[in-house]
Amino acid sequence: MAAVEDHHFWYRGLRDVLLRTLARRGLPEHPRVLDAGCGTGANLRALEEAFAPSYLGGFDLSEEALEHARAKAPSAELYRADIRSPRLPERDLDLVVSLDVVYIAGADACFEGLARLVHALAPSGLFVLEVPAYEWLRSPHDVAVGGTERFTARQVSRLLERLGLRVELSTYRLCALLPLVVLRRLPGMLAPPVEARSELHSPPGPLLDAALWRAIAAENRLIERGVAMPWGSSVFAIGRRI
Image 1 (tube, rainbow, N blue to C red):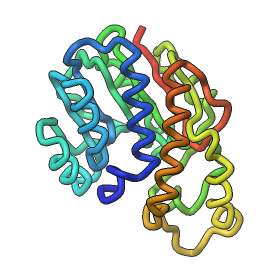
Image 2: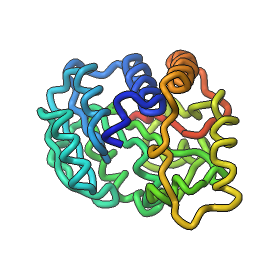
Image 3: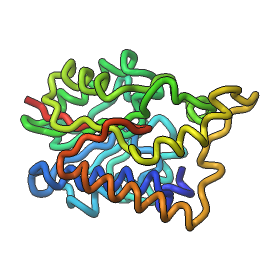
């Protein structure tokens, strides 16, 4: 992840839709921001560059990931914690993001921790959730990264509502690319190998990566305008604390 997230089309697409949709939602100047499951830090760096937060924090279970994140976002307060029972050094947060984290343990196991994160939001604060879509799309990649649950957009919306949030956006991502995702994963979906391997070990070449990025960027412009994609390989949602 640390090696590819700066340039890989999928990570670039996620950061692009994150920043585009947040820019339209009236974050206060210099917001207080927490990345719940910050991984190796590229999202933290993007949020810092885009919004100049007065507080930027992040946590992750992996100390190795945190070391990479500290190099990419040295001004952030980073610490080791579990989203199922997160430690929250700050309150009255304006923005909490959790990107492809909940599917590791599953929604039920994470619910108490998510509720704690929502409780730490200021009134009208935003919560951004991204998870992989469709149980039938499960593949050896999910096994390799420890994913236990994939979701539909309706499930994600219901989860945000259960947490007391007003759903402002709930959409699939990689809509146009879903057939390619299925074709790539189909062999492993039908006959999983003995040893699961993450797709990050074999990223696309530069020309294909650029073409995939252009497709995602075009889709992100539609999502920015409020268009919900009808299908895709990920679900992206924003809820606001009422």
